[in-house]
Image 1 (cartoon, rainbow, N blue to C red):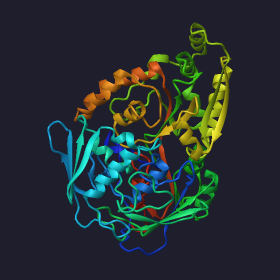
Image 2: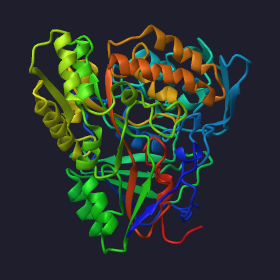
Image 3: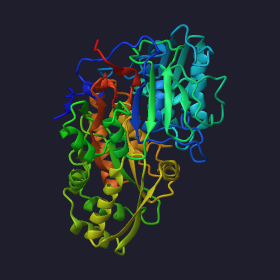
Image 4: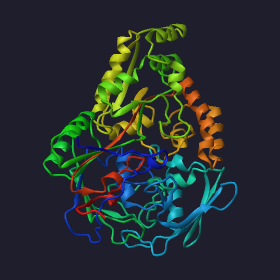
Length: 530
């Protein structure tokens, strides 16, 4: 068996494994690059004109690049749960109500183009995300900011509309990436693949044909990250199988997104001892989203009947082969506040109950509906997952389901514009807190573009943000989950594990994925351990 399972303690393990780090200190920038394979693809086109602009990017694929090329004031730690300093030397609430958050920046910060970075750039960056308010972007994370101001060259203050104990976590995300105010337009996106940040790497080259990208160590970087390599080369593959073949032939050193369930089994039992598979618990979730104002899914009885029929256990066993677990709420297992609200409400799959639901609502059957999914963002198993959903619903005799696959660069803007009545989406957390599986989905200007609102949830979100001891918020989040199970604007399906497969001379693999499934390239080294 080649698998190395990383066992994580509660909460602390949400962010990093407990194994000791192993990576060489690449103090220089020479040597062969570490080649990382991925099935993600990036395009600069009409639908996504600025793939790596912090004002527009809000998915794990783009954040994989941005997390390594931009700095934020604070970042998620290597272990534990409290944010630690990044571009700042100190940050904290300066009032008892948790409404004013103050940060002091490091001295000597510069962008990769040599321009000085100061507090005005921080103010500019946050205001820019809020002002552009891109429909597929992360502006919703900053909905509670009343104003942000640079009070000096090295100090910036955030004034919040209401108390928010989760605000420091939001500043760890690439949504809060600090951009150069002399390069990025104030009121529009920076089109193309250009990245000007102050993070550990620069995006030196991006092959417009989509074959590869090169990230080189940033000579201007000022921070406390220990960078264990001089260069990363990302290679883009059309299929997981092609990526696996490249790993086995040593054309690439590591692969992560996306490793299919079949590959997990193959790599776990393979005779090749030169490849190691690392498994970690994850907070990735998948779910169906419904347009609650659509002609078909706007009928609650239709959404409820789907909830009464869908068999999560079958999806997990037949499609994901144990690399995922059934999920009965948006807040994944392992986080305080998790409650199996959908199971508590609907129990095991019951087509008979669904028949009664539709009949009592006067809904004619079979109900015609198209389930839409993306073909190239969540892995090759997605098509099989939706084929299984189609079969489950159609076998009930109550639905006439069609399924449609759409490339991500077209799927995302259409989904968030509610062009689809029912579609599959995934979520990788911005930070490890139940708030991040609630507010982005249901608050005003949510990232889904969903018209669904609930007055009680609107009250629960600010209520829980007043609680600095996050475990105390569990009861309130439980109520929110019960409401979602009752109204069904979304249908949770499964929670996934995290995997990386790497050649045995690559070190630091156990530390390379954070809780949001974002690759931290600086952790990867080659050769001798520390």
